[in-house]
Image (cartoon, rainbow, N blue to C red; front, side, top):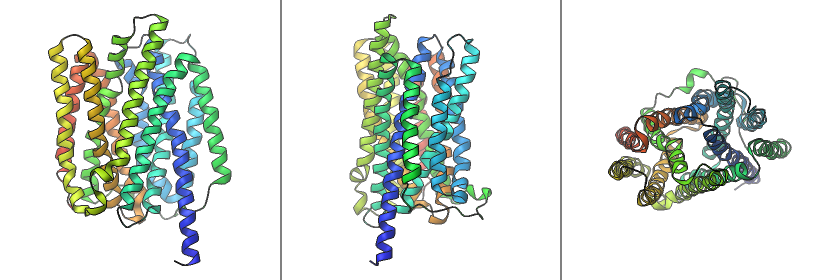
Length: 419
């Protein structure tokens, strides 16, 4: 290896580490903010549908942002989108601290929806930057791409899981306003440090990039994106509103002490679920024996893993219907079943994240990744809307049954992939 190649490799690795660290800091605040908003407004008496509305702009912004972010990064460079993502999240946190408890419910809902929309833009700018950097910087031999993307995605979700726990703890101990301002200050420090110390190694933009190039003509990318829509819709249809509200109803007696205890228990479950999910994602290359398997075999197993996942929410929905009312054994069954769901979901998610990079060409990776994560955000948006509506119409059983149907649809889309 020449001196120039060695220097480029070191610069690339340093850039990858810097992007990953910034992404971790962002996702810690992202996880905390989600639970802060959900639990804070639930205690104020918001209905399941109103709670879902709070996250609609967050997910809708993700759809639009991912569609545009790939083109923006291709034109202006990955560092630009990373800085923009971190800066917008700081602004969103500061804005959320201005929420006045004296406002009417309708005004509060609209305000939080708009702020969450800004946070959604920030999240997906940061995500697209980090995921595209993996494609450009990861080793190309020995399953290196799968290992790097699995490590980034898995560690990110583990950090987000800690954010859920952090958000619940901050709400119980410090209150809503102090919590969001504290997180804004920490993230601002990360942004300033990165601004002055960002290593070289990430590509600059190309002025000739055209927006219409965002839409892929590659069938594998389009079918994988469709599978992603239904996979993440299947998770969020129970994760966003259904399970937190169900657990709150079971765990809290309505007193302040009961609320605090419920916050910690809900935050702990969501943190453990997300950390487990992230851990299994990081191990997915080992689970799938990716280092010794050609790409065509990994494409072929995508449908089977989705089929295996679909069994769990459908079985849990049946158990909820049979139980009739919340009882101890039902809650234990749900916890165990959803943890198993998280582990199998993680393998599906990690495999998808590898395949999108494997299918993408270096010249248009930011646009293919942006389009793919637009689909991811569309799935979360659909799942978020259905989470509140399903819980209000049919309780947790309907949330879980809808999840199972979505996973089946994801499996059908994955079955159309070709090596």
